[in-house]
Length: 303
Image (cartoon, rainbow, N blue to C red; front, side):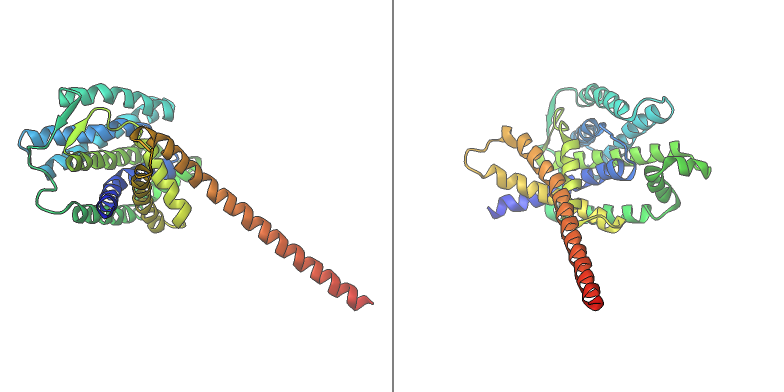
């Protein structure tokens, strides 16, 4: 049990980079980017092939980061310069990356079991914690810069930002590229952790990323960038822990995990709504009680 929980926390921290990437497009830019399902595998494919060919694992992960940024750049250009709908541009790139990833790997899956690994010298949990904290701090600092503030403002109200003379096309391209770069980096690390890369390993990543974002925000809130990025990381860990616990339920099989994911996301979306409704009812009752008390006092004074 302890070993499975440790594995869940390790996976959660590695997937947190992907969740932070989804957070940038989903929350900051308000951009429905489905490139994630393809760029996750792109990162895994690049890192795996480079490692097999003798490249240092960390250099391979950096190259995977750049490969994901290139995929996001293409999506951003399709949307901003090609005037393609945001959702459709992500779907187009996701489809294109399926074939590109096969070209990179040369076959549907590759093994890293007999290769030098990024986690050979240092425990996975240590690397995962350092990476998650480092990326969180860098993102917090980035969103305080001029381009980071422009990125946040573009997601809030792009028309207003354009009226101030800002180039929203550039900020969207930067945001989508950065998002997919983090997603690809997560894919590279997951491939090293699992010791294999598969062309279908990215399927459903957007759902996992959204689940992590929604769970984190529902439990910890997102009133500031610092709190939001922390909530996303913790949400990714909680998701993997729930995933690991669900697998231990008698009769539960791996094929049921997509259903479990859908249930988790539904609960994470519904719980805050129910909580707000309860708070509104409680507030309304208090105000009604205060008004009635005031009426009684006024009536008593008149008599």
